[in-house]
Amino acid sequence: MSLIFSNEEGWIISHLQYLNDIYNRVKNSNKQIKLIFNDTLFEINSQYLRQNQINQSQQYDAMPLQSKSRKRKRSKFLPDKDLKEINYIKQKFSKIMLAAKAQGLFSSEITPDNNEAARLASQTFYQDTFCSEEENFYGCNDTDMAIISEVSDKKYVFPQKCNFYCYDVRDIAKKLELNNQYDFILLDPPWWNKSIRRKKTKYSEASYKMMYNEELIKIPIGKLLCSNGLVAIWCTNAQSHLHCIFNNIFPSWGITYRAKWYWIKITQTGNTICNFNFALGKQPYELLVLGSVLNGNEINVPDGKLLISVPSAVHSHKPPLIEVVKEYLPNEPRCLEIFARYLLPKWTSWGLEVLKFQHLSLYTITEDMKEAQNCNNANVNKSVDSN
Image 1 (cartoon, rainbow, N blue to C red):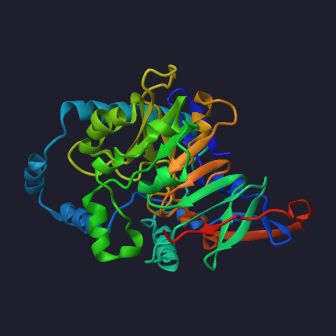
Image 2 (image 1 turned 90 degrees about the vertical axis):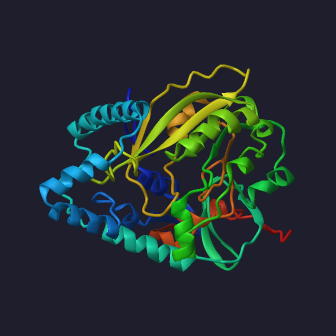
Image 3 (image 1 turned 120 degrees about the horizontal axis):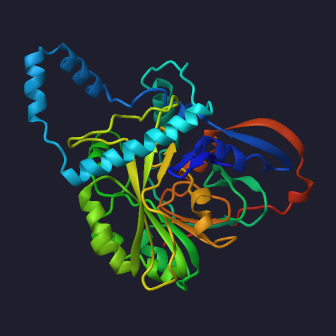
């Protein structure tokens, strides 16, 4: 569904293709329809530059050569350990992309425009779906077919066999059983960072609640993950967060580190969304840190794998992982995502914005199909809870 290329270096994933595949058959009232995700949000045709970065680049290009030399000297390079890691990632990335392009996977005929259409679509989505009021609820689609239903007078699409909880993570022990039932737990924590703090000041609809590392430690992962289960946590490139995972969060959860993978974000032409930076600054990748239960069954997860995909223009819309981790999990695994912003088939999803990317405005109905005669019992069992 989502894998479009793989080799020993890693995988290339199509997030857009995955979304379209899981909503190929959807029940809408008594009709069976097909939904197509808004592909404009994946029209990342050039390196992502903010307007101030464009202005800085133009100013730099206009500088005399002598001034440029002085500016380069003032740049502080990253530590040798970090430089070695970046070179490792670059080499693996080049190998994967060379092989993928040899199979004709990426087009060079795309006109770059600094992703103007994707930016506008993202801004419109945030404005149209922004809600300042929090509402606590939970529900499920217990049928074998995706369905469209309303929650608080808004229409959403729900994948098959999904469960969802729109609650603060601090309430997880009140709503979920703590009997070590999940084979895979994925987390995308709202790491504390200056960028999101600035967004809160400028426009709140694109921001989200951040959490301190000390709060993440208290999530009862050790009581949710089974003895041979796998946990994965998305992490920024901030060394403070990575250090906290290794030395505080994982030990507190009873988890031992297994591997670190790299999500490389690319344009539609197969180039990184920004250059690899050998000084302090933005990188074209994020980290995925994997672990398993301490003293549990040994899970042979390879280290240093690359996940490559064209990213969505909306913040924290992470690519699906189930097809790249399923070989390390049992058949029909029980999966839980914490801090989720969209739903997955047969998964349990938890987060304050758990339905964010299920909003029907993100999809287009492409065709009416036959009447959904076998789906008359499909529904979403939603219970509103103001506590």
